[in-house]
Length: 367
Image 1 (tube, rainbow, N blue to C red):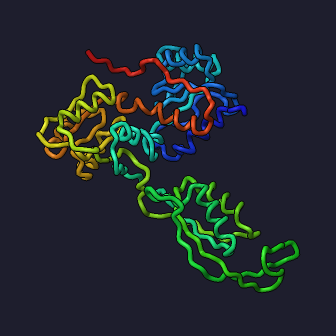
Image 2 (cartoon, helix red, strand yellow):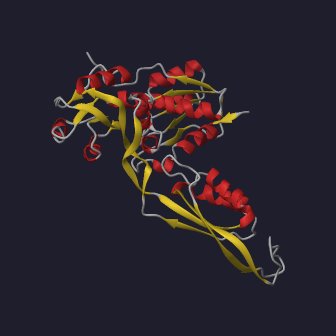
Image 3 (cartoon, rainbow, N blue to C red):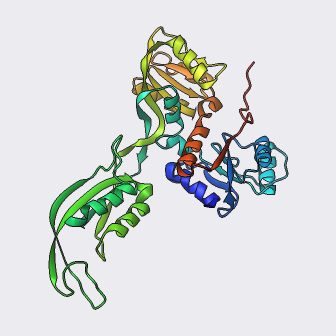
């Protein structure tokens, strides 16, 4: 089976929808044609000239990165900096470039969840849930078709609440209708006659970005010519998506032992942190990348430590009496995002060739 750039994009976006990205971000296909065939991909955190050169050497047709190669826009391509040279080289060798950035930060199972997995945390929850982006479907199904229709809607992505799927509610009742005109072909009843049919009212919730997918599944599975359904916007927060996570260690650790665990797990040579308070660490808040804005959320979650990156000097003082802050570096906190890409692709296309970039793209060095 021939795989295209479009296919690769759809696999990633099925996991991390583009609708989840922040307004300032630039996720998705940045360079290349969606129709271009792909035999191999290269996974990276950043797209640099050296990474594109690596892709050329490996004869890959697509680069998948966490950080977008173009974020704020490029007005000229003169090769004056590394970004421009990377873009020029990718275009020259017909290499597509794709980025999954803040959508991968926000989605359940994304960057922070991968960090929690590496630390073997359990009871993991979203630290700062995403705003309102949930909808509810209400529809009416003939009794005998209830399993088929509800199953199709669940399969399309509806009915996920926490660690549960296929969540819905149903109640039996009667539907009425009359088919009018010469062109109708009602599933039950006769044209021109008032009809009463035992039906089940079915309702379930879904992420709003799946609206068209959910409706399409409903219409395909439902036996009626005209399907009655309602879509309601909900005011509930989506606790399955958002920035950061909080979870529990398998056993308490001293602050020093926890910091040592961070250094070992994330290959971190240096961790900037607030003063050690002599308390045990059990409840851990995490956020991949720049997470200092979530300090208040970490404190409210009753976490013992908040692990993230890019804290500024004065921010360290904001929570030092309430929580241990551990800044382990931006790249270091996001480095395992490549594994998420790998898992997505291998699940969809097991025999596909996937390379992990060996280029050091972290701009920060330590001595």
